[in-house]
Structure formats: C-alpha cells, structure tokens
Length: 401
Image (cartoon, rainbow, N blue to C red; front, top):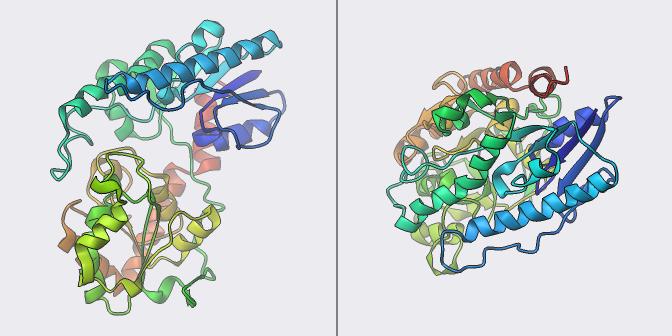
C-alpha cells in the first residue's frame, strides 16, 4: 500500500498518523512539502513555489494567486514522483494552501483524503464576532477567495476529515455527508501532570502550587483573546497578591489584522494598560520550544484559553491533558470540549471582570482546581487520546483497518 502525504509545513497535523504508518509493515510512504528545513528523510520531497507571497495588486485574487502557484509546484513534484514509479493508492493532504488543486490530474485513480480545518463565513463565526474590529468590505469579499481551494478539494476528495464538530459546522450543509469528524489526537502518555515540574524565570523557580496564571498562544493576538486577557491583567494581579502570570506566544499575527503603527499587539496593549498592572509579576517569554511550553502547562495553577468562534487550538486540549484548571471563553469551539463547571470554567469572551474573578476563585480553591483538572484529563483520554481513539479512527477512515 502506497500513501502520499501533502502539507506545505509537513508533517503538520499528519505528524502522528505518518509516524504510526512508518512503524507498520506493508506501507510505502512519501510526503510533499514546501518546508525547507523540515524532517530529514528520503520519504519527504520538498518542492519550490515560484510565488511565495501575494503579488499585492490590491485585488482580492492576490491570495488565490499564491495558492495556484503552490498547487502548480506541488503537481509538478507529484509528476516527478510518478515518473520515478511512485503511484499512491491514497493521498492524504491539507487543501487550505492550494497544494491539492491539481493533484487529481496527476493521480486520478488514487483515493483522496483531505483535512478540512475551517470554512470562512461572513456571518456567525469569527468575522464580525468582535465589535472592536469590524470587518471591512474587502475582507468579506476575500472570504470567497479564501474558500476557493477548499471548495475545489470538497468536490475532488473522496472523504474529508474535520478535527471537531464545530469545524465541520462551518462548512455548508451540502458537504456534510463527505465530512467525518476525527481529531489528530493528543499524546496523553507524554502530556500529563508532573508534580516535579518546575521552571526558572528571572532567577526564581516556579511550581504548580505557586499561584501561576498561564496564557498560551502561537501568536499574541485578538483572535485568541489576548486583548481581553491583557485588560483583565491589572485586576488579576491586584486581587491576587501572590499570583504570577506567564505568557507564551510570538509577536506575529496568525489570524486577523496587525495593530496600527507597525507595533505588536503586546506592545499596543501594554501601552494601553500602562502602570495599572504590576509588570514585575507578569513574564512574557515569547515563543518557546515544545518542552518548555509543556513545563509551563505542568506548573500552571490556572490556565486561560480564549478564542473567537474559530478552530480550536491544540494548546487547550493539551492543557486539559496536563490536568490544568482552565478558565476559557464560552464560545462554540470551547463548549464542544468543556462544560462549564465540569472540565473547566467558562466566561464570556469579552467580560474582563468575570474572567479575573473566575481566575481568583480557582487560585484560592485547590480542591476545585484538582477536580476540574482530573475531569479535563478524563475528557481528553475518553475522546481525543492519540493511541486509543484518534489513530484507530484515522486508519479506519482511510480504509486501513
């Protein structure tokens, strides 16, 4: 059985599935990737796109031009594989960046399985959710262009995989019969509570019982509620005199717009808050290696996760697996995995007073923290465990079990 994986940042969401298949006899694997410095393996073939950034013509088609370039480059790499005798039985890919636009023409007989993360909508989900950042007309028109590669893939694929029910719900009803819900999985053997975990910051050593409030995001930006968290920070620190705050995340923008003036959201919000917060007790560590990130979760006394109605971050599920006591936004992607008062505490995304109060209650109540953390981990093991739930389901959906 031959499988071809396609992902511009391979392995991406296919990391665990690819590794599982590598350990099984009878599978010949290849992967196509735009990533230059990814895993060093003869199974992974890097391709090169002639267009790596939008041409900036000012047209809504700029984004799609990049995707067409990626799709062309990927198809040519697939043709080279074919000339060398590799004919996959199954192609597993992420269509969001355009790589799969022409793959059917190269391998028309292969079964095509696509990972669908999110379908952009002008109403009801992330766009227009935050009144502080109303969408402009070009943004709304551009949603159709963002969806174009997904629409091509929906028509072409045999089966689509969505990580969560919420993400599936963003797609038009007419496609739901093609879309199965299957998360990539959480490695609960590795991600778990560690009573001996500790982290050194600014000459001090911190452990879980030390009143540590954590916030994690790939980038610190409004889509993940960074502005709400920062505006709650003065009260969190004032009402909890022994608390320390640890923030992980880069200064880029993954989703939404950059702040004005070429600044970062962290700088913008720190300027807004000024001396209202005791910044000596708030530690911004930037982007960190995975092992450091995991230690931060393991020492967290209270973990905060906020998000627009957008796809769910792995960090929330990993925080749950690590038995964190979580305060999260009462938004649909979160409500799928956390029931208020059971696996965590849910608050209105915009309510900074309720957020700071909920954090304070948990900081003072060890028994409640332990109960929420235990139930959060139980939820992950039950529904998202890598070895017992996710990988077997993925293999079944691929027709390999």
